[in-house]
Length: 305
Image (tube, rainbow, N blue to C red; front, top):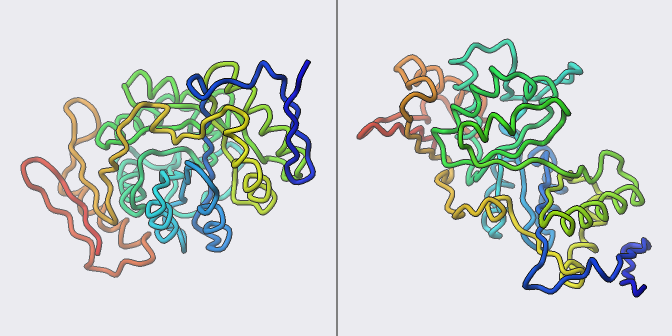
């Protein structure tokens, strides 16, 4: 049988001719690069990847806001990589959601992280092998997300995650991760995972992969992504898989939230005050007194200059 051969960084692609489809019926893949924000050089190199790669930014990191803006300027989709409690006791970094938080603090922390990350269209979990298995905490999360025009991608760090089905039950647009590209960082392993991604996309029409700004991952994707047209595969952001209009409501450091009836807890004066305190505490570029919370026509705006 005829096979298409492609050599990428010394690695050989061999795909059966049956997997090569016409552009009109191209399967779609989404690639999300996680963990942006702590390393400027690797983050900028990731953003320079060709095509509609999506970037998930850790909140309150030294370069997170800058990288989110740069990705947006290049018409790339930006997500919030929300730290969540894991089952291994690994440190979350700033701004995480934990089992120790009561519901008001949980919701305040989420609001502060969203506000601190410009241009986000959606959220996925950073770690979260513990928190995403909790029906109660995922109810809190998804009910809070009903206040925002955001989708949720379940990173599937636990096989027991209930995040996706909770999102569906509450009508939050949602996807789940199919493939991790680089939990081993050797070129051979990344190649194997990338080919698994393509096969899954051809099998079911679409597939979602998560990778990281590791040098080996970027080396591979810089060479592999330009070959997708020849493979009959389209690279799209999550919002396109979800058929969402890509018009993020979160611009720069401004966020508009419209609480919905019978969903998240109403925004009280105490929550506004505490959320402002979280923003001032967690946002490196902000100075005390530069965050304002105003309300007009039942719309609350949290603004940091």
